[in-house]
Length: 131
Image 1 (tube, rainbow, N blue to C red):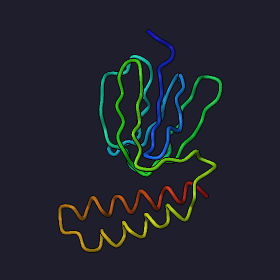
Image 2: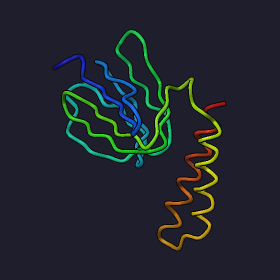
Image 3: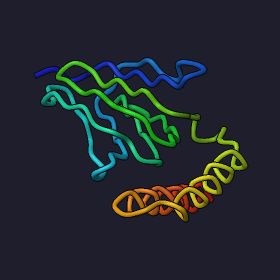
Image 4: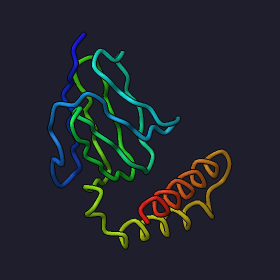
């Protein structure tokens, strides 16, 4: 069993991280999860939240607003809608996304309305966690 795996975090405008890690905590759309070396293959969507990449000595944290992750035994690859290093998040951008999500959720019809309301709740929670 390997003790490290490759972690790559890419946002549309840049690569934020490329490092070897012991574990990556992810905000999956179906719930939080941790990927570790020798993980079973998996592709999932991300909800707004925090990614924590731990190399065994220190951890780096990132904020994502959503995206996709591919996990396999040797790597975790995140393609984020938007992503920031935890201390460099422009709060006004997250608040603007929240306002857009609220407006869209108001006019959605079932069953999509539940998805829109969940996105609003996830963005509110993200803002609360940033405080």
